[in-house]
Length: 441
Image 1 (cartoon, rainbow, N blue to C red):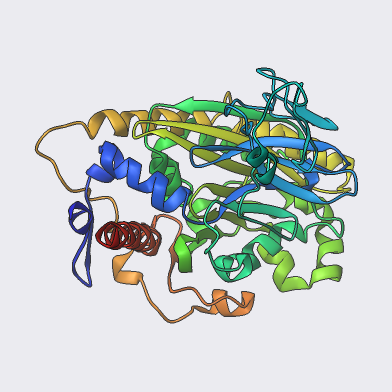
Image 2 (tube, rainbow, N blue to C red):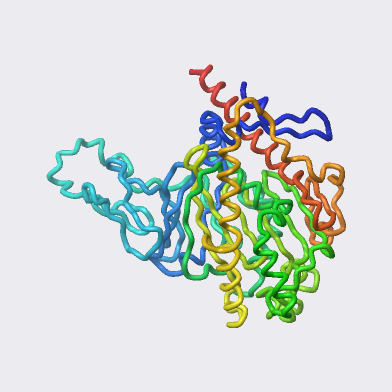
């Protein structure tokens, strides 16, 4: 089978990724069926639906879904598809509504997804068996929350959410506990598409190697501010240490001290954080931290705090939604700084995001080159990779499968090894299960 040749480990020191994983339509179909539609996906935050009848729409793989809060305050995740002829029943990204009405034939559903109207049913001449079937919007088989972060799965047999997240829970805790009231989405979201494979974003989010060559304009801005003693940043990359953690189930993290503690929004709350969560966790909260919730989301905390959720549309097309997150009740001056830094770095019109998107699209075009099978982009850090938990992991209380700790310019790439091993496992298991079912039928 093709998938056996896509991720190759010829020795302990050689990890090869085939370019077909970014460009082959068959591989893309496997990913949608066995990964995005086979495991947990991050959907959003409970804080996006704070009141009864609030909702937002998103996707799990190819399936459109609505996350909604009913009249009693319970959260639900239902498939955004009318049970009559399949039309969408909700067309907006977020809002507040007591019901959802299909504009095609007028079937209506309440905020929990329960069918409350079949238009002209009495006159319809339906057979007796019609009433034996449910006409409610189909519930997503698995829907759960960890610390206010919402996840859903189309596969009823996935493990419990906290088991799936594993040590990633600790990294999420570092975000949620920045305020006693948790985190919220700052008003306004970003949405765009790029002409590249979704895994280019997956890799880039934990790729420190690209920073100096991809974002020189941003670095120059930081240096000029340091020279003028601006409060924003004091960029001293050569003095900093960086590290990566590879967790189970495809999750991972990149981390390191911020260039300047005083330049971050959390700097305004550092004393309160240390009193409430202790000096170690407060230090980690102030770090630069990018974490991946496999397969579809990343939290990026450096210039500000961003949540990225992506949806693969084709092997060479990806939709991205981005959200600025913030601790609830943070000081006004911290919120102003957070928004300015978010606009400057993360916004689609900022100093960083356009650079990254250009690179993704360049990679996608370049990988159409005939005769080149294997990437050489997963080797940096191999000599420093270790299975034993480093001191940084132990002080945080996590036990990564592998980790790398080194200087700022190391730019570890081995953090993606475990992610791609899990990627391969899900596809192999899916194909074997399908083959077994086919042989039984």
